[in-house]
Image (cartoon, rainbow, N blue to C red; front, side, top):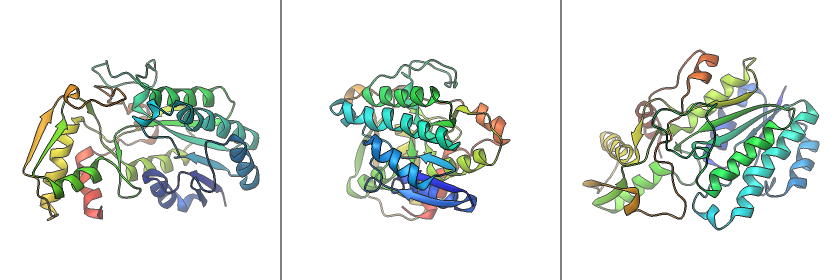
Length: 288
């Protein structure tokens, strides 16, 4: 039986990956207390002991705004750690699946980003993720870099859906940014795509995966409340007000347009991901 090491097992994606990939092998899930991605030697020691056939790196420094003031830590976890994982995977002849992000792009394009488009991140978080991608690519490991975006799920601590539902229970009016466009993506769909990818003889490289469709944060919030009300979830919110990015300043600049073109992976898997609203409805039906 193959051994599958999953980092970030307690995060929203890692937990989902651990469940969905369990039929493919023995899952060894590790969180920060067992494998600190900020410590390269700890990574090397763990992989030497476990000797996994597959490594799925769901662990990451995801504090987009906090990264602006903690750049060293962000680069250590998002840049150095994936490189070390790839180096160790190469030694073992193992396969590495690494999760990356739409933040590697600057958001100035107005058509979906291709895997071949040049990266041009706007903040530390995106730059640290590019560093990880480049580090992996410089090794001889068999790797898949899977870029995704606007991730949410039932597992883990917080995400946009959970935040909106919490605020919707507490407030009658919410302001949500309407001039940032992307694709909400359910963790369960990402995990299923990873499982399919690993079961095929897919060429190594970078792939994009998100749900289908395009929306703004504002329209996403409206959809969350509409679907939640249909399910009878208790909400106080009565109005969602569209606001601009300039009205909601943050330390890190977000890409205004971060839609990813998923046709490359869709052609490999022979199917395309479900529409984001369909997946949102399923996620809410599962319970938050």
